[in-house]
Image (cartoon, rainbow, N blue to C red; front, top):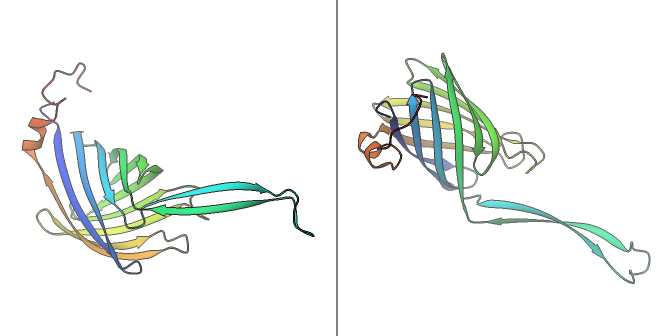
Length: 190
C-alpha cells in the first residue's frame, strides 16, 4: 500500500446553454502507474431524470377513443450523481469503464505533451435519450496542478451543451494516511 497514490480533483464547468455550473469532486485511488479506481461526486444541474411508462385504461372509454393508452412521464429532480470507474492506461491512452454519472458507461482519455494535454470522451446513459450521452472534453495544464478545459456534453441528443471550466488536480499524500484500508496489510501485492 506504500505505492498507493491518492489524487484529488476539484472541477467546475460552466454550461452555456443551461446557464449554470456543474461541479465535481473526485478521488483517484492509484495503486500502480498504469491503473486506478475513480470515485466522483457530481452536482449536476440536470439532476436525476427518471422515465416512467404507464398504461391508462378507461372503462368505458369516451366515444371513438381506445379503451387504453400509454403515457410516458419524464421527471427531473435535483440530485447528486456519482461515478465509480476502473481505469487502465496503455501507453498514451487510458481506458475506463464502470458507473459514469449514476449510469453504466465507458470512456477513453488520450494523454499528449507529457500528460499536460488530455482529450477525453465518455459514453454513458444508454436508453435515457434517443442516443447515449456522449461528452467530449479537452483539458490543458496551464500551471502545475491547474487545468483549463472545454468541451461538448450530450452531443448526440437535442439537449447538447457547451462548457468551459477549470480543474485543480493534486496528489494528496495526507489523504492516504486516513483511508481506513491503507493502514491494513493486503495479501498478494496486486
